[in-house]
Length: 300
Image 1 (cartoon, rainbow, N blue to C red):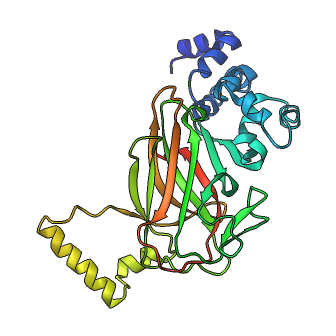
Image 2 (image 1 turned 90 degrees about the horizontal axis):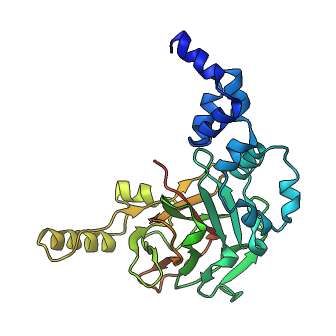
């Protein structure tokens, strides 16, 4: 940058610089704050960070179980509020959802609590139980005791999400002493608009599933069936196999597995429906602890 250009920037009113910064992104504003003291002052202003917050952030915060005043009055600046919402999800809608922001973009993220999901046999104490875990963001999580049919469903209104954004959907779960019954029985996930066929994926909930697949650790009977299917596919009699999604460890020490993705195109007042179910029952399963289903912007 030439001396003249630098002087021109210095001569700009701080309000003008703040307005320009508000048209960038939170990440860019933080970078540009290093240019000059004037830029730093403008980048810290409420005018900039108010633009980075979602237009309906006050309405969402008003649904917090702790009350809106406890959060809005706690922080001296909009930047502090923004960073708080990025690093510490708030619990809303009576404890059935959490809300946070993606730090780099300010896009909205939600998690549907297990209590906000439809879980087959979920209210039958012999099959599932509701417990509290200190590491969960929600008051309750759902623990699988024993079922021979696994199926969960959830939905969120698309208008709650950030427009023009590709979202990914994840099941967030853990286990106390291992997950059993899913070793060789993947489930089918579906993500899509209500009333339409959703994107389908094959999902493995076995924590060692990726390693088993890599080294082909499968019983002889299942290996034979897979080999036969492979032969049929080569003959053109069976459709191409879907890519299987495997669990991954999150930063908060929970596990997650991707169920699908969805692009929010403009203002849509429909429900995004999410399901995860096995395609063949009869195998007893246990050990899975569900915190919820998270909907967040797709990385990359």
